[in-house]
Length: 361
Image (cartoon, rainbow, N blue to C red; front, side, top):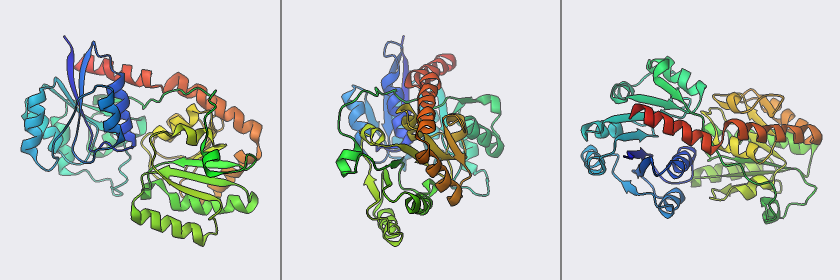
């Protein structure tokens, strides 16, 4: 008899949690699991892909506990697993609906909570959760420290990504933007949020262009009108109009990675980045900030370079180091691809969740 599983995420636009849920839902063995996905806010490309894969998708209002309970009760899952962390409504609704096993996920380093103070709703959420999953050891340790969850009750399952073929003849972002073949390209795939530190990256990149005037920076992610206006103004202020492309989110990001020489990830907070793994899987050397779960993915001096967060000079220096030593950068990229293939594939992630679901069920 199959385990009925309901995975919950706030929205179905492109994002780390959303793509993790999509990969999990599509990857679970359908002879073992009957999987559905619930969401409560915006529809997006993730929802389209789930439905195309034959995975049921339902919606309930996160603002209406009674509706949430009714939807969950109708589906009657054996396991409800929430991949958001906003309040206790979803977990309480699953409990009220009589779901036998309720689970919650932790993905971030509490960037909204500089004082590291547990909220009452977090305590309520934890009381109702039979098990908590975490995307990295760093996130798990912070959950235990701040929320008081026993470390042995937190299961760490790192994100996983597909390993792409490197033999691809399709156009890349370099051709799309008309960037000369000899010009060095640096990329960053992340939604334009404050913790992703795009402003700091732009200021550091100005120092790179001072040394390598033909260098290009290509950013890609979900962007609000306010963020777009602010970053465009900073690009003009720094005189980088011909060197920087601030692109909106796209479903197919492989052409972006395939057009890069270097991937940079300057985030101030990071649970465990999917885009970092994707870049490494494309054999790209990485420069990243040493925050959260990033050191669990990037091995400093072996698959890339790690620098302190908000250290613009160090970030610029590491980018220039990689661009100036192509053979070393190539070795880093190959080592990163091998590390992802060994430790962070979709198959490994899905099987880890499957074992957990089998165990608790």
